[in-house]
Length: 542
Image (cartoon, rainbow, N blue to C red; front, side, top):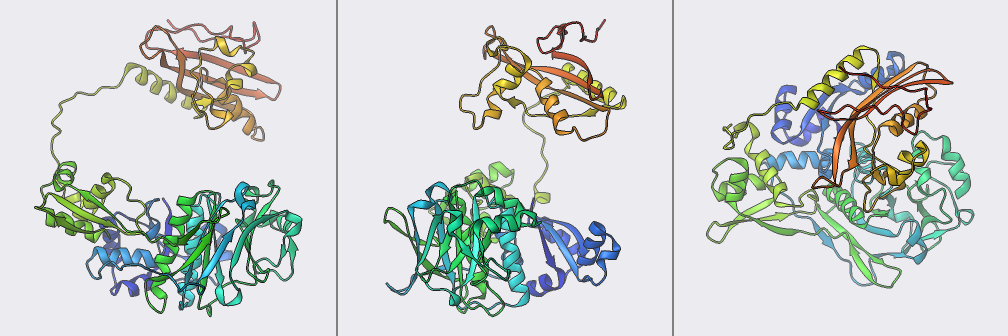
């Protein structure tokens, strides 16, 4: 779960009242959040770097709040406060409005066909006449970073760029060029660099070096220019210094480029809905016309509202409660889902705002109703289905094995259940046709082509990845393997296997292998093709 750090005094000021730590913890729980920690910048630095490094750091109290990974609207102070205020029925949910300028007066972003192979999608919007303070500016930057680490998947799917619109001139062009043809002064640098020079410059940067691999091996790099040839950004790496925003910025051009169009639209909607609150006309966003390579045009942001209908009895049945339709509609409205009863009370119509991209199915609506109702208020009942559960003998045996092996000094490994055909065949000196492996119909990568028939490749890879660790390496794994069996209805069955590795010297490895343990059958597998004849053995039972 993402963690949002907010200053307590700013949070309480925005909420309009103060809370004790216990009271705010309870409020978070009621809203489906968790107050993870009450700390300060000084305490954080002391824990991470030592007390000596914390001298001069702020003692201001910070709340670290765990937020559900799909609630992008709660990743900043603005969204968090808005959600809590609506939940406590202190304010009504604002309605976000898209302003489309008169023809010829709005901004335009042109996408060229060269971007298709590197970063094909782009959307944009303008926050007009916005007012920043130091706290608002910090929150604006922090939200972008939170989105980059969460829905943007470390900028692989979407990269965000924000620019001072008064320093640049549209229309803007999103294209891709050879690295040597791109030259500009990157953010907070004192001189211009070519794209290859920038890649070398940021290779040791603690923050940006993690994103270089996204484009460094591409023949073309994505870049955004204004009408005067000024570089706005080279996504997903860095913005240009020319258009950087500051506390005096009044008009912000927001662009999101990426490989996933759906995610790009969600990210753009999230940023503009959170910070349009500070525009001269609150909750309004100026639209941008985006021209695709095929000549078609789209207007962004979408800020789309959609309506869903859910039957009250469906919600009551799923939650085990008996609320009236009007009461359920009120609960959902408190969760920023404006709702009302339609017809004869047979349906509840819910309006999904652009901030709630997490609402996909009726079950998401039921979940929000449960949060607003209060999980602690749902009565516990005895299930209608009577069952007696018991641990399977095989699971009981393997749990005992785990305890004994751990007590003997071995470390348990947990490797992938899927692997490549080479891992279980060629690399083990076996033909793939003899392995009885179950193949994946449409593997996404060569590393996940088949279900493993042995635990050996996984532990060998674990050892290979830990060659720098001091010897001995004492590893074991007890996990399921899968083999074909034509006599079974499903033609395959899972079997439990276990494997120990004790690497004593770099040139000598002792293996104890037992594969395919079932509740009634323990077979000798010491002559497996992967092992040297006469230099292997199996444990005996009986």
